[in-house]
Image 1 (cartoon, rainbow, N blue to C red):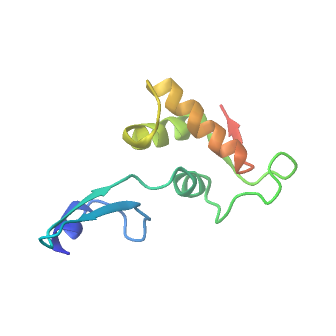
Image 2: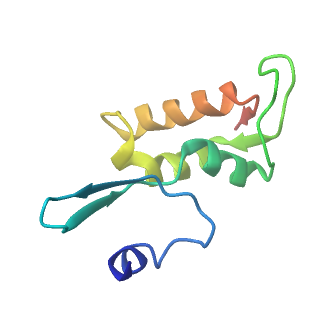
Length: 104
């Protein structure tokens, strides 16, 4: 719909955006667009197409703490974090669980 296209016009084409749509009896609707998944943003930052099949044993790419901070700032509204440091820790944990190295 035009409303969705207007709300997402700043996003890079092809970026997955989880969306919740609520449809009412009168056929009107509302939608809430969330930020792209952390795993997608991490893979993009590391320039890889998928995470490790064996995290902890097989390394697949790396991201810097600065990249983790940038992703955390993007994701802050959707993360269950009280502050940016907690959000960065969440992103770093996601990177490690995908088999990525987090470097300084």
